[in-house]
Image (cartoon, rainbow, N blue to C red):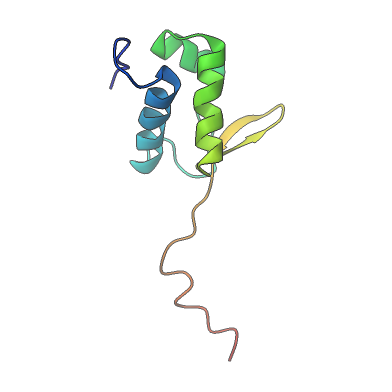
Length: 90
């Protein structure tokens, strides 16, 4: 996937879509680091503020969490069936 420099969507939104697709397909598994701002800059040939905005968008959508000094990590999602098996209220 590549970004469309001439398209109407902002670059950071395009990058966020690509990264979220990678999270969804398991390229970036839960509790593992996503690429750094610098790595995003290199891969997509964008500026650091653009890379930062893409990561902030993923954070706002609840897909990643950023830990100061460590990086950004994929949020671990609870499986949809996990709540069905809970019988602790009996």
